[in-house]
Image 1 (tube, rainbow, N blue to C red):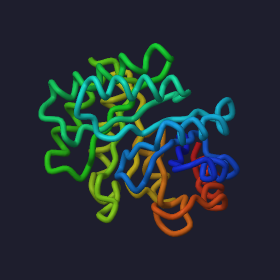
Image 2: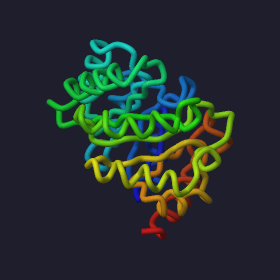
Image 3: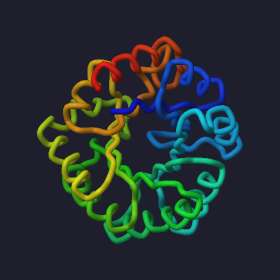
Image 4: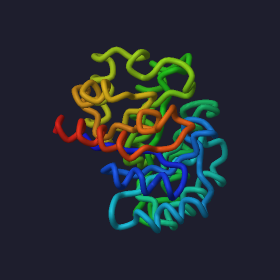
Length: 232
């Protein structure tokens, strides 16, 4: 299982690199679970990290196909290996599929994958996460992510039973998708995420000095990396 650390700028990317993060994820924690950094900030992060570690970019919750395709193309062109999009405002599965297809059209020419996100703390979370696997695979996504939107609420481990997450991960793998898990994960949750079959564990708050809106700490990342390495 690989350790992904979400960073908001170049300085945090440097800290995540020094701590040993395997994937550097560009995200603005002040803008929600999948808040996007500006393209200029992303370019700075990629310039620092590019060639050393893969860089991913959160693009927020998609609402418009044209805007989604444009954003995916822009960040893919700037060096993103993956772009992550959510669907908190998507009206139905058909629209979700169309939005994923739009992201794929934008990202694929640059060799960038698309990660489709679902949220464990949504009212219809159980139905939507299972449907997302099929929709994402059919639309050409590379993987799926399960996260939480309310960062003041419970973490992922409190919101989904182990057997339920394990079955969902297995279904995604059967569909040819990689699986990332996130949502207030702590060092104590890494073995759980690994045991559920996750390919990637996404971390922000546990890598910071004092919560997800503070700064990334090298030593915190180093501890998390050591834990994930010991679980291999």
